[in-house]
Amino acid sequence: MKLQANFLSALTLFLAATFGTINAQDNNVNTEFGVKGGFNMSNLYGSGDDVDDNNILYGFNAGLYATLPISDMVAIQPEVLFTTKGAEFEYNNAFASGSTKFKLNYIEVPLLVRVNVTKNFNIHAGGYASYLVSSKVTGDGSFDFDQEIDRDDLAKFDAGIAAGVGVDFDPISIGVRYNYGLTTVGKERTVAGTTYTVPDAKNSNLTLYLSYKLN
Image (cartoon, rainbow, N blue to C red):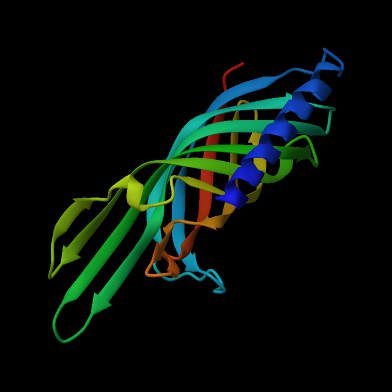
């Protein structure tokens, strides 16, 4: 929780400083607003483990964005998205076979620095903070089930770093972005003097997105 609080505080201070800087810039540089959506390939990774291609859960994201120029090349890009994350686990043994999907739905707020390398190509990086709005676990195969998970049993906030590239075809842009979670999905608990976190895992998400400029 301390890491989450520090990360959110840093984002808030950065955003406040950014808007102060933007207000001091040339007013001839236009602010851009638009809508965006994309295809998610999410996963969970444990403490000390590397992210791999196993257990990928497919999902989506959708929301709004703004591009706030600082100069012709550099801009700040805040977004507000609904995004799905989680992982899918497959099993196949002598007793049963099938898959279990662990689904997490967030309201996510990325805050990115965007650099226009050329007129039609950009790179962007920054951080994100998310709030868990719902979660469930479903099973297909030998055991079929669909069970909501009480949000109080999981960490309600997630935070991490994000980076990606985009190609602009005014008013449409396409790109790819990777989010690397820094906080655990599970909530820390202490039982009989022992502290543990379940699930002791963090979010990982690769997104292919499409955006449309409204102004």
